Amino acid sequence: MKFFRSLLVKYMLIILFAIFIVQISYLAIALFVFGLGQTGISNEVLVESEMEQKWHTEAKSIKNFTDEVITQHFKDWQKQYPKSSMFWVSEDGALLTTLNVEEQLPSKWTPAYTTKFIKERYGGDPFTVIAFLGDDESNGFIVFEIPKEMFKPPLINVYEQYGSFVLFGVVAIILFFIIISFLFFRGIRKRLLHLQEAMEIRDVDGLPIETKVKKKDEIGQLEQSFNRMVCELRESKNREQKEEQLRRELIANLSHDLRTPLTKIRAQSYSISKETLSEDGKQAIKAMEASIVSVDALIENLMSYTLLMASKYKFEAKEINVIRFVREQMTTWYSVFEKEGFEIDIELHSFEKNEWQVDPIWLGRIFDNLFQNILRHASSGKYIGVETESTEHYDAFIIKDHGYGMKNESNAKGAGIGLSIVDIMVKGMNLDWDIESSESGTKIKIKHYK
Image 1 (tube, one colour):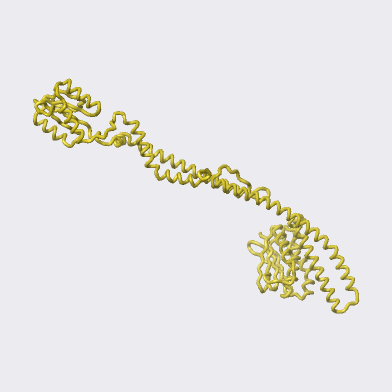
Image 2: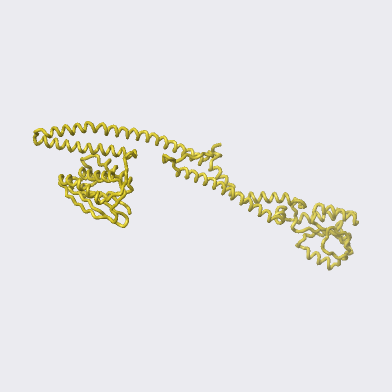
């Protein structure tokens, strides 16, 4: 039963119907019309030679040569052949008995007219048979005539009479087949479009919506599979949200718990640094303080990333002069890079419009993360450059270094989450950014489209 409900079976039936539709429809309509039009048409297939032989036999069988007898014989034949006509001409050429004769015949037949009549009728229409009564010319002759069309098969006669009706019936059946085929394929197309629409529509969680399964054919099975996929996606989404919530809570708690021992370590290292130490001890304290600063920055990034992903990081956009803002940021970091021996190249030019609608805390965090990455990963190049760029489409700040590029490994860790924070904050302020990195250095553009 499942096989017979499939679209394949329906499609094959349509193909088979298409192959035989013309022949079947023609035969069906012809038989129907023949059934309607067979009144007055004999089912007997007439043969000229047999008809001629039967008429001669009929003429020989007549024994009494009177008008009444001949007329009765003629009527018997007309019952069998309604479209026939018959007449009797005596030996002396007198036209005696006629039946169903429509043409004008002479009352007196001369030899010349008889010869002319026979010549005109030979091989012509109507088919004519002349036989002597009693097989003796002294009794005169009887003539039997019937239209040539009566020798055609009955179906051909019907077709000649009702051919236009047959043609109309065949065309009607073909049109009916075309309409059925159109409705069949339109139904398939409609169901596929409905499934496509269900795939494109999203609910509040951004997932496709389930579709209603109406039939159990191949498309119905596809709809069921799609609904199962939607259910699995929804379950996966719920699990992911629960796991994400647990992960955020874990990171937030872990970041908070790490701050307390880190503060104590920082205080103890400061106390130790006040003591009289050897040169190696001083270097160890310096390295420990650098590690404390690095860990503190990592914890801060981790906390910020968690808040950003949870959409709980405070955002307050305001219009600020970004040229002045970046100059102030560079003033803060200048001494840091100078202490590490960096070559510092700053070239800031005013934009056509210096005021950007941004959150200054977010923008400051972006520059802080990028500068920290240069210190951690590009310190080998000992170069930092900050400049502006203006094009027809955007204004931008460019931060450059001469490190080994982002594809090379670095001893420092944590740059990944820092750049993730940069990406979220840049897009959150409707800005854009791109990175060009190679073995000779990295160039980052922060763009503001006009």
